[in-house]
Image (cartoon, one colour):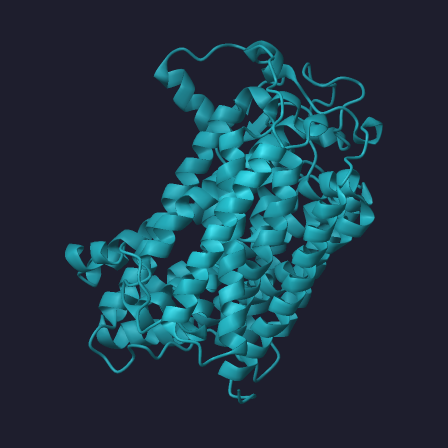
Length: 542
């Protein structure tokens, strides 16, 4: 492993782990640390993309985890293809959010948590990481729920399937080889090809599917439907994805010169995740259509059994296999996102290039999280389906907070220099944050006041959109920045200086008050989501 300083990194580089400097070693090849050759032919570019490919593909496929499979299946079973439009609207959200962390990782050479702590201090950093650790731990619980349900379909008991999966997940990351880990993940990702025959076997119709792209609220806009929509948002664009992809870009040693290839990797991942989400929604929409199970979603295990009865044993088995595969990929990625983050905070080695003896904290954190999450699933009587839905909804509620920090970092010239957000990127990302806040506000209102009509909620959306447009225009007028004029060659070689040498950004009283208000509101929203889940479980009347 090469550990000499990169040509694009000065001695005062922000990089803190020497394993994050060296050759790009991917599942499908290697690019030398000092390789600056131009790729003129399409063959050279494709070969380069195959080496770079990984962080974007893995984070997106990991997005279709056990929670994603359950949420998309629930949407199809309860609302047919009526919520397909939510997936179409989430495509730009996925790209905009993840492209920002690609730039942060390649230019800074450190993880997301490290930047938040360094630029905003322990107070805000602790808020951000506390959110991440809570949701990540619960998310991995849902992954083991998925393992239990998938292998339970084939007759394997939970007390065997869950511990076995935990051992396999830990074994996949040990060994001190980034390439070996990435090859294991690529093999798991290849299983997703099974979504094609699964979807075709339920005979979807083009007209009904395309009709789902028209925005609408099947059955009227209420707290139950809003919870599903927020869950779709939370499972499709989860906070852990920001932390995982930035750290994985850093761990793969991708530098600014390779950003365009990593953007292509991201688009490939988005195409795969959207194809999977549509197929999963379609398999329950068409496979269970006309049965007593329509509108009666409970959990993924019941979906698999229902598909076996009404669409055939092959469809049921394929659904269970995809659920198992999604659970393993998701647990691996979410667990690594947490271990990467802990290494960032503690300033300890946190790379898959290290062996266990060289980075004990990194591997112990990953193993402990996997072990504790697996143990929770073994507790008898746990409402598995509602936990899965609740975790996705919590992720959706917390996403605005994570995205706010992301936008602030991507406008920090001390960190990104010529790679800061353009005005267009800020407009799009600001619109995304405000839309997520409006969704969260709507869910809160519908939960507190279940008698609110669909018309009232739609008016609330319209008013909120108007406020967002006016507020965005005011911010654009008051925060004009001079453009950065650097040549392409200089831009490709620019790296973030050592973080402790940079002046800390100053928050205006208005920005600080706004962020505190957002935090207080999100804490309230989290409580209300939990109360709604408890209510759906039948433990609470409203």
